[in-house]
Each structure stands twice: as C-alpha cells, then as structure tokens.
Image (cartoon, rainbow, N blue to C red):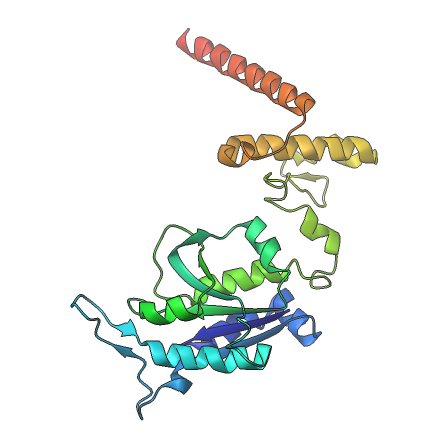
Length: 262
C-alpha cells in the first residue's frame, strides 16, 4: 500500500513513521510512505503558502494553488491523468467523520491513499471542494495541524496490510474487533507481587481459554465502553450471561453498602 502525505512538515511525518513496525514494513517493501512538501509548490521566492482570510478573522489560511499543485503532482503519478481518474484524498479535519477500526479496514483496501494535512486556520475551501473525497477526524479536539492525525491513520491502516505484522492473526483479535475491547493478557512469571495469572490460561484447554477471553472482552467493554457494546453482535446466551453477571455484581454492591452502613 502507498501513502502520500501532503504536508508543510515532511520531516515530522517521516521521522515518526520510519520507526518500529511501520519502518520495518517500509524497508521490506510492504508499504510506501512519501511526504510531499506543499511549500515546494509555492509560487513565490519565499515559499510562502498562507495568506490572510477574506472577511477578516484571526490567523492565516493555506492558499489553494500550492495545495492543488502538490495534489496534481501526486495524482498524476498515481493515476496518469488525474483529470479522468480521481485518487482517494483524505483531509484531516475535526469536521470529518470520526476515524475508527471499521474505517481503517475499509481504507486498507486502497492501493494508494493521499492524506492532506492542514495547518494555520485551515485550507482555502475551494481546493478542498476540488480534490477531497473524505473528511476524517481522529477525535473531538483541535490540533495545530493534520500531521499527527495522518500518522495515526497510517499506523492503524498499515497494521491491516498483509505481512506488516509478523503474526497476521493478531490484527484480527485486538481491541475494537467486533466492537469489543481486547481481553486482559498476561505473561511470565505466573505470580507477580501477589497477583496470579488466571488459572484457565494455564490449563491448556483451548476451548475454555477462548470462552474466558470472549467473556472478559464483553465485561471489559461493558465496564469501559458501554457505547460499543450496543453495536456488538452478542449471542442470546452471552446476553443472558451478561445480565446474570450484572445482577450478581449489583447485589454484591448492595451487600457491601449495607455492611458499611452497619
């Protein structure tokens, strides 16, 4: 998969992505990541790409033409004739759809993906209308630019590209798969500071281990992200088990409160 990141800070992007798993995948030829400096397409000797917004207001705005020229250079390399075939262009913006695992899986199917990073007070609306296919946010907060969100997206999407993870199966069982959080995990030693590994994980009984992990994922999601549980497809047996567990826990809390009151 090929990522093309349009940015004012290419060093920031490449320094962050050329390490660890993503860096190894690039070296192995599984991924291609290029950071295109929008300033290279400025039409003045100072390589200035911003100007004051019409109508007044605080801050500066990235101009349309340098962004468009940077896009065209990448698009023509990808598609040949960018006028006939439009590549997929994601603009990182708090106004976009919130990035999640489902979106990561969908975007991982693209051969080429252009990520556009804004800065200052944003980008001239006219070029966004011309080139952007997707508006994506990584959360309901404001950052100084789109570089960090772009890096987050590249990392999450790259993990889903075949071969990037040494154990491809691990990508299928992490948090947010099936809208469930990941179950608790343990490593050696069997006991650490008085805390023991759950016996079922030492049993070697794979069916019981999978059942325990599924139940723990459900409980963890119920306790930490109940909003996700509403989207999860639980079996009727699992729903009944969760109701019984919840009722039992609530009863235990009542007893504790009574004991404290006494």
